Amino acid sequence: MNYQGVLENLVGKKLLVGFTYYNEAQEFLYQKELYGEILSATVSHGIHINVPDGKNPLPGHEGLIIPPDLENILYAPRGRYTSQSTSEVVSNPDFLSAWLVFLPASDNEPLDMNINYAPLFSYYTPRHWKLELINDSSYTGELIRKYSQMLIGQSVLIGLTQYRQHANETELVRQEQLYGNISIIDREKGIVVEFQDGGTYTLPPDPTMLQPAAPGDYRLRSTGETIVDPRFITMWTINQEKTEP
Image (cartoon, rainbow, N blue to C red; front, side):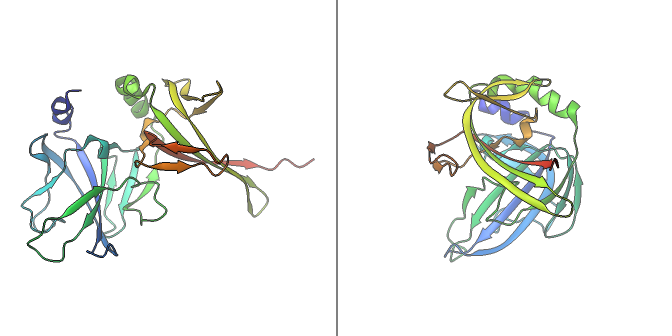
């Protein structure tokens, strides 16, 4: 793949960046969120983002530059994003990126930055932005047109939580995990995931909900199966009304 060509296409796009900070003992400290335009993006010099004076979240760095890691440049779901630390509201950014920053014991030591694999679906790290999701079928359709061939054949781990709605309460029905490869991605047919046994499951046609999965072993609670290094992870909630006899 021509990574430089892909990076160049980021220039001029709007990016939300979230930083979660830890000390040298890996204890959580605080978070910062920024929003800016990508000024340049190269393999050798990283992704340079415009930042207002005095708001650079990376101490010791001139200008905000993040690593040129395309795995951590996610297409942003359409909607209104509210910063958890400043209450700033941003509508319809192009991309999301989230980083874990480990601060050294002294200023003479380099920063350690790792990908935060869960900017939207995190249950263990506070969310950077509160999202009010907007359904924009024309936007997701354009993403499918441009990038469907890059997604076909990729593995995905699906988490499903199903609820049943009673009069004034919500009942948890079941939780399950599914794993397979994307066989079809189409604006009308949805994202079809094919399992090893030939079965399929269809997700809504929204590529922004396919999030890169952190490398590692994933044990499926519903089956006991262990999945190694899935490419994507996505989680969905299914709500259904109870039908009385």
